[in-house]
Length: 422
Ligand code: FES
Ligand SMILES: [Fe+2]
Image 1 (cartoon, rainbow, N blue to C red):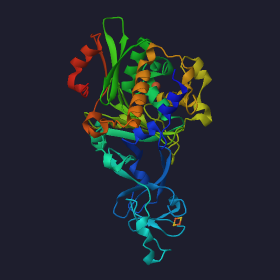
Image 2: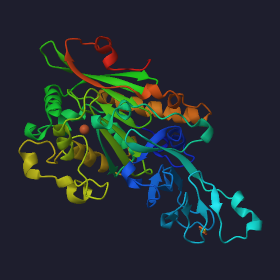
Image 3: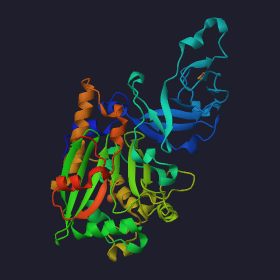
Image 4: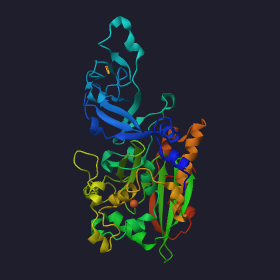
């Protein structure tokens, strides 16, 4: 359980909230490049951490992320004209560049000099690793871009998708840090519908529904090892990575593996940025075709939107006959199953009435660390991680070995895990 005041602290991310401030120390993915594909493209609305913004590319290709409302009389710049290195408000013609300077004020006489006294709030933006990232914190603390392994790879090594999650960001993240549910929620799936890597993983999950969890705190968040006892002297170990504040990388028996960032739109809505990647080789067409089906690490979308086809308006396409035949949920696809459960908890789950057991230690550890860091920041202690971009470059692992201690597994895997200093 979590006290209501701690639940509020954990979940709420608007300006001035402790968790919102912690998020504002990190770069977060916010758009896919095709949303603002060309210089002088149409501006798009962007809601991020509870703030309404517009994004565009100027004539020189620079990315602008500005407050949506014009500082004159608060008209929406979504209606604006993106022209000649700036966006012009269509109400009275004030024009702003990507840095937030007012460059033209055609309804004021030049002698007033008013345009030099007005600015619009602007945020730093950068294209990196297949996404457009935004930094919303103090300019003097702006860190380098994080070197997630998938972001450093050539585009041929990854497959990416952005989708809407109709719940608070932490609910989605907690689903990622909960290996125990895989045995049950994702159980009974017809192997013919799975990718080869997932077939092996799901058969491992089925062999032991009571994995033993061990969490190891790190500078970037933590990793945790789950041990499933196969009863024949071997153990399946899954080492999952949690990278502050909202990123997971989930292990699979075979590449590709999948990283997801749960980026808050506001307190009740999230955009997930999923990156499935193979660090060692370009993704095969078979891998890409499977991901496109929506049955694996990411959902299939309603064309022209970021809304999953399988969603709450169609009861996640739940099929009771399939469920009666042995499938756990009757819902098609691993990601859809996760989303159904988490979204149906409500926008912000009532954590006061939970009853957490030993299988929840990883969820508990993430909550504690986030709450502590948000409180530390409110007390003036800045997080160090954003300024160490190499620390984001870690990898999960899924192995079946004879070692029965986490430390022995970690030392035998060595560099493959690329754990940062503990
Ligand atoms: S409201 Fe934008 S120029 Fe007047
Ligand atoms: Fe899941």
